[in-house]
Image 1: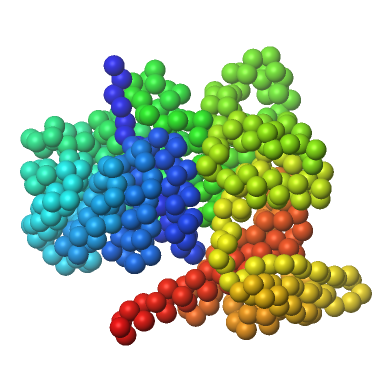
Image 2 (image 1 turned 180 degrees about the vertical axis):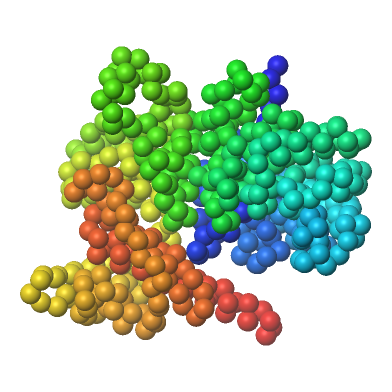
Amino acid sequence: MQDKVWIFDTTLRDGEQALKASLTEEDKIQLAHTISRLNVDVMEVGFPVSSPADFRAVQRIAAEVKGPAICGLARAVSKDIDACGEALKGAEQRRIHTFIATSPLHLEHKLRMSLDDATNMAIKAISQARKYTDDVEFSCEDAGRTPHADLCRIVEAAINAGASTINLPDTVGYVTPDEYAAMIYHIRNNVPNIDKARLSVHCHNDLGLAVANSIAAVQAGARQIECTINGIGERAGNCSLEEVAMIMKMRQDHLKVHTDIRSEEIYRASRQVAKICNMPVQPNKAIVGENAFAHSSGIHQDGVLKAQNTYEIMAPETVGVPSNQLNMTSRSGRHVIEHRLTELGYQKSDYDMDSLYESFLALADQKGTVYDYDLEAMIYFNQIKDKDERYQLQFVNASSNSQSIASATVGIALNGELKQEAATGNGPVEAAFVAIERITGMAVEVVEYNLDATGKGASSLGQVDIIAKFDGKQYHGVGLAADIVEASVRAMIRVYNLIDRAQKVSSLKQQRKAG
């Protein structure tokens, strides 16, 4: 019987820390449902004490997402533990993950305390966490640069205090696979109560070794890997979930371990994370990159046609890579759309067919043929439209040519009342933004503007991602349309609605304080 390796997903915690703008609560809920379909064992979804918004998101995910154990992160501090315990109350399975630094470098310069002091804090935190759940994980931050003898001392104490999972992270991506394996071996052979806990690893990719280190740790006896979808995370990122999962699936003969990951959900999860987090996947990324199953060499093409495994060690379908062969037009009925979405792994609860079909027909009339990537994009962008948004786009008309100044007219329903403005600019997008600014009466600073296509060719949908700053905070807006100006306007209106939502929350807080 092969050993199981637990998959601990931290896309919504460590992964989110790498983003230029924080995810909204609805974004996190959507991603949490997507990640749960992968059948991960544990999902770390936030740092509840860090902000009221993070607390609410963790609380909602704990109540709404079923399947994996829902985990919250906490420093070895009393208020952090209590925040985690409260936020996770609604979860069917819950885990509190507490940590403290253990390396001499961190103890001296960051914490300014001794290893004994850190050990005592860890024991108290674990004991307090046990009041909320029996599933407590303890991490030795910067374990990769901690002397093995020091690790053994604090790990033994943590297990005695009630930690059932011990995580030994390579926090700064410093160690090599042989060093990491040696650390795991040493802990397994020198901590007397190690049989009472599962050993976990959490690797960063600063030297490009996160996946290699994680697999080396598994070979040395670790049985949990902490990772993120697409490998997103602090600095150069975390260990990539899809890579370690497929390594263990494809090389079971060698590694003698398995995971419970539903590999056919990998591609869709990757696409969702890339879109919502505004973190595009590089084309040559293993498993989920655009080129992962592409063959340009004539020799390779000939070999694959004769026998697929000559140049493909896994079939695209294994990780859920869809084909774009289904021809969907404005003549396609709802049942065709529903059937195709089912084939792509979506459930009826993932979308509202009425609004989706309306968007589908409009797009089909505009570009002729609708592809799988169009459907997936429409699902996401229909989900982020809130019916109670203050600003709703009614129309946009823009014109430009090389002989005259660009102009744009924008119509926005403001609390249900149509407001429209015309403006000029260096280009139609700038002109439209100026018009929006006049309607709203608020000026935002565009920090970053990115345009991408959801498919190939002239009929591709344009996806615009905007990072904008207002009142010292950054907001991420996304827009999708066949027309680039319209996509840009939709992204900017999304920014204004997020600002409006933030202002309402701030106002409520002030009212509560005053009351």
